[in-house]
Image (cartoon, rainbow, N blue to C red; front, side):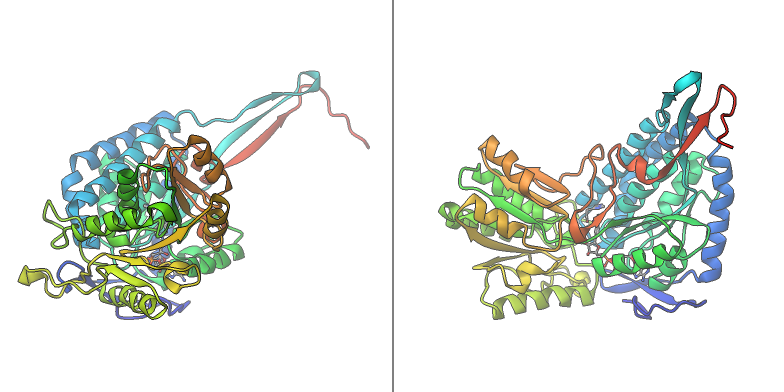
Length: 483
Ligand SMILES: NC(=O)c1ccc[n+]([C@@H]2O[C@H](COP(=O)([O-])OP(=O)(O)OC[C@H]3O[C@@H](n4cnc5c(N)ncnc54)[C@H](O)[C@@H]3O)[C@@H](O)[C@H]2O)c1
Ligand SMILES: O=CCc1c[nH]cn1
């Protein structure tokens, strides 16, 4: 909850006060002031000063500092994961996995930092040209609340490896853990101000996007906000990376290993309380195995332990806040009204522990009898709600899977290797999984097609999104003027 609307859109100096609720207890644990235009400018100016030092360092020097930051994250993993759990509500078990992919991302880009280079091209008469890969300057990162530390790491690691500075704004719902990342970069030896954190909501984000000294904006969040960011950035002709929402299909063919497919569907729907952009929430199951698959998925979903996410064996904590919980429950009501059948869950949950009574808990839900036109099948719910649909043929399911404006991810379960590759080649999605779901190795690019965004995070290609190419043309002879 917050004191002013996230979408108020005031373009003027304002100071909002946010109340920081923790999802586990549904209680305020802190208040903080948002960065206004002045604070945003201070952050950008200090990043700009740090950039002047950082850009001069060699790739090896930058690499060493990123490796040291990765080492500190590893060393402080349990502490950071605990903060993330308090921040977001996800189970501490999962939060530790997020922290792992965070330090792995820093290590990965540390490994690439020293090998970024251009090419040398021979031209007639002994002349030649060469290219230099140069940083962009001060980059802005704006994050969503579902993976706060990981999103900040996935953006800052390639940005810093390429020689940029970054000013990062986390979601006002999860402002805390990103501060630990800033502390760690400083301890590892980056110049002061190279990675700055500003706090706030829509207004703070807007100040960042329209600041004249900002060279690039990398955004993770919803489609409506992504459109606004693109519009703001276009005024300054700033490049943007947009990592937006999804409504991804997961296709289960009858020849699959059914136990693996069930595990895959659980991974595709219930991590982080279902608040995951790439979730495979439209689960298409071939009719021959529909009953068997559904029965097993329902059985496994009922077993998920909900409760205090700081306990080791909890696998589902509270949703991010009360209004989001109501929003998700609203989708389930609407699904029932539209003819879907609740096969399990979908209710408010009050854990036995009395201290959790005001937290934002619900039981994970499986919806059966879903049809393509239903709201629960068309819209991103961003909660623990799986919709099961049946299909008969490969051609039919491909048509239906692609019939969406989103295109973030997709999955296929089958033992037929030719079918698997044929199907993923036709799926309109930036990330496709064969016989697994929701694994995100940092070596592989991550990002969407269609309205799920553009640009990529992770993988070698992301270097191109945080750098620019300079061409130098060298004449070895005399100038041949046409005049
Ligand atoms: N593709 C991905 O990698 C990815 C990852 C995580 C989440 N998401 C998506 O994020 C959404 C959930 O996150 P959310 O509710 O935090 O999204 P959101 O769009 O409401 O907010 C995201 C961030 O943008 C800021 N913001 C809001 N309005 C702004 C404006 N006008 N100008 C600048 N900044 C502004 C917010 O304060 C927040 O930091 C879901 O749609 C989810 O799919 C995508
Ligand atoms: O929520 C979507 C997946 C993800 C995790 N970290 C960044 N994106």
